[in-house]
Structures are given as C-alpha cells and as structure tokens.
Image 1 (tube, rainbow, N blue to C red):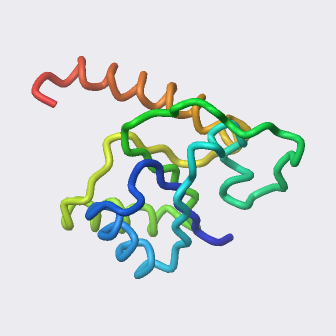
Image 2: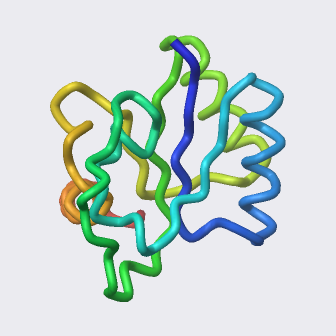
Length: 128
C-alpha cells in the first residue's frame, strides 16, 4: 500500500512546503485537494478506488481551515510523520486517518465530523 496524504487549504503556504518536505522524505504522495473536488469520496481522492465520473463538481466555498487526511502504509510511518510535523512546527489541528468507515465520505462530510470532534476535545481540555 502506498502512503497518500490529502491536503486542504495548504497549497502555496509555508506550512504546506514544510509538510511537503516531511511527507516526501517519508515516501508519501501529497495531494492538494481542490474545492471543486469536495463532493468526491476521500477514498477516490486518495486513489483507493475509482471515482464516479458522473459526480457533479462542488460549486460552494468549502471551508477555510487546514485539514489533512492520512492514508499511511503503516502505523510507524504515521507516528514518525506526526512527530516530524510537531518538530517542524507544521502541525495541523484538523486531521484524520482514512479508514474503511470514512473512505466513502466526501471531504465536506469528513471535515464536519473532524471539526465537531476537535471542538469536543477542546472543551474537555481547557487552554487548547
């Protein structure tokens, strides 16, 4: 299995360049997802299965927050990537691992779920 990282709202940014270096070093493919692709299943965006060609492009504004969806070849690579992101001060608050459960979700649906979980965790840990 190849490692793929889907990136949102990081293209052309300093953090995006840092992340590109980290993931390239780890042998991961990094893909910047465009707003018009936000209705496609994240599994298709990661190349896990073919996408439905009849799917209409998303015409909305999307979301402004940075987000990563990680499909890693192994737990060890994921751990190393997260450590390197912290060390290089390139952390992204909204991130998820691609799973059989969420691979058919759109980027918008997964964003809403991750954001909700992040907000719940922030309430449990004051000062974050």
